[in-house]
Length: 116
Image (cartoon, rainbow, N blue to C red; front, side, top):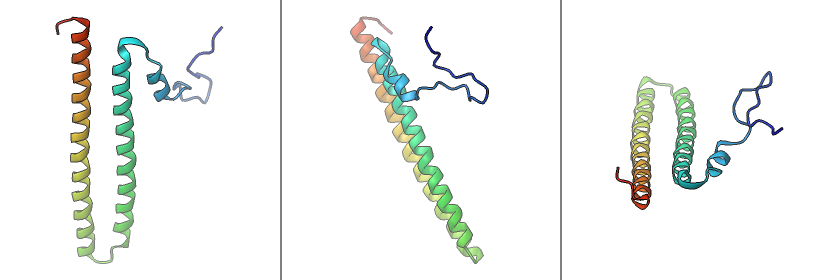
């Protein structure tokens, strides 16, 4: 009997016991390219979320150091400008990654001789 990839014991969170990147890397055959793209998107999303969280904590620290209303307004304006810039850059990066994934899919379909 093989051991299940899921730990459903009491106190378990029910998630697979193997990291997601290993599961994506194990996908064979025609779906390997798709799995690689999904893994890259997942990694990018997590990296972005981590960086944003750090910046938000730094902003809270800046807000806490403000002693005058104008300092607080200035800190908020800086935070909002940085946040807008970060999300705009990330949007372009994700759009590019999705475009690359679509191109890969188109090439695989073409190689297989299947018309979309």
